Image 1 (cartoon, helix red, strand yellow):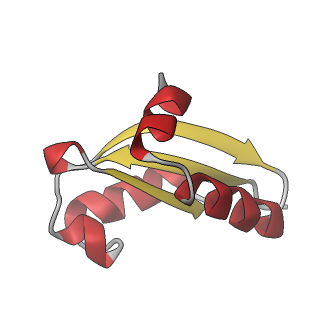
Image 2 (cartoon, helix red, strand yellow):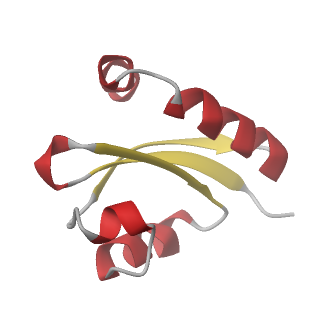
Length: 80
């Protein structure tokens, strides 16, 4: 069984990027190598600032969507 997680990266310029994966170290490495999401390619380097383990892929997708709807301030509060 794969373990999923939702994560937040702090990108260059202080921007926050939210994503999900079943291999967090590999995903962060991809973001920093320029092979990750289109957004993070132009905002490198990125730093992992928050993650949450989730039971299933569908639950991770739902949690990711919830977090993406938060304001920047709410995300800052979440990772504090």
